[in-house]
Length: 212
Image (cartoon, rainbow, N blue to C red; front, side, top):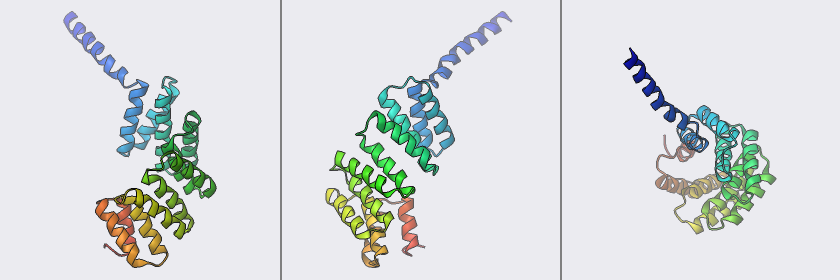
């Protein structure tokens, strides 16, 4: 019996470090990112929040956690919570182009066009050679119905990277909205070739009758 108790005690001691490892804030942030990618948003929110509440993250990891949690809130369509997290992250590093771009998208969903454009422009100024910057600003104008302005920015994104799929997708949508079905079709099919299996591309192709 004493041997049995000893074995159980040793097993319990061996299990403790593994369990404790999951409570390391930096590891929790990484686990939260994995959960978010897998669509397990409840777990992601819990892990991000516990990591942030620990007070043990350095500035870089705090920004990563706030940005990550903000993206989860965005995917859950909780725009105000997303903006709050992005804003906290920018309070720590105002020149973070990625967080600025993410907050821009959240402002778009609230139709806060002025704030969205300000964030997108600030992000673009920080990374002028990134096609995503021009494409995101174009997307703001697309959502506003300013299709000519949108196309100009999508053209700018493609001038930086002729194979940047999202710009073809968004430009195709703008051309269709202007009644230019041929150019819209060509752009959407190009987006499909560059981003095979992309759900948004397939949704737009289906919307315009290009696939069943």
